[in-house]
Length: 411
Image (cartoon, rainbow, N blue to C red):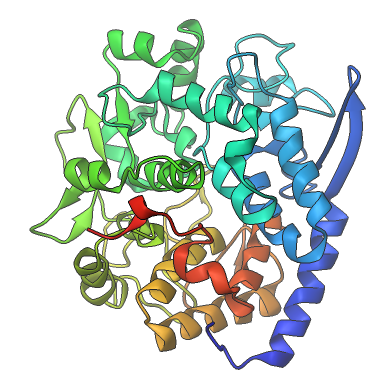
């Protein structure tokens, strides 16, 4: 177990996380279905978001394990018969007309959006509740995602919009969606086109795309497959998305973009995979993570610091564009898992302390300035409580909180 040597900070952080998660907790009933979840940020994000709930459930297990079960159970309660779970669930109210323009809903009365977020439910359930393979609804959910989104037969998933990755306006999508990238006026046209196609990826591909096989999405998908006791997708991820020459992972898009894909933190996301070959992991850490491009006073920025697209602005032409520079706690945690597994203990402790200082200085914010730790974006942001996972690491962190199984042996 990693020792961060910050007992006092740990106590303060635990209190702050407990208070924020409790204040964000929402319960109710809709059409006879009970729900309970952690609002990502009550003022800005009142509904239930798929991967936000997964991250919140992971932290809740330290404070109230039953709330972990209720949180993830509410996602399952919103599943369609085919196992599909939308990336946003409107339990309490429907979005207003302005938000509906940009939200991926087909009909006004829809309970959920018709697009996905990174499918990490099985992994979160395994970390926080129990064996996901024993839950038929979780198995059906992941089977459905794979059935609809594994377009090449290698187990990896493809996305039809940038927001399906959860990384929204990340510069890695700029060369792909160009004027239709999220956070630009043209994004509205992309949503309208895909709404007409009922957000069906095969229809989007038939219409000329673009579609994307994205790194971090498939890392979380791969962790869920391992949690379900299924064969590892890490070899497929390496085969399709790893560049041996640069030592980095990058997305694949169809049609192929004409311009270079900017370097973002997602190139490092496979560090979270417990069976990533050690040689690849050490290259990611020593050649890239610990370089000036990513190793800052707080934690890795969401975009390499030397990229022309790196920016700490929150708005562009009056529109919010996320994941274009600031540090996010969930990405820091995924990278931190790799540092622990590869026994970079001093670096893991440094990253944990950097995130803890940011949270204690600025509160639980949506993101942070990677240099001075100033809080950015929404306040009382639930998944930033993942800081507690780093400052109070559990024994399972070295294997990404997955049980050891034969197929996880690194190759």
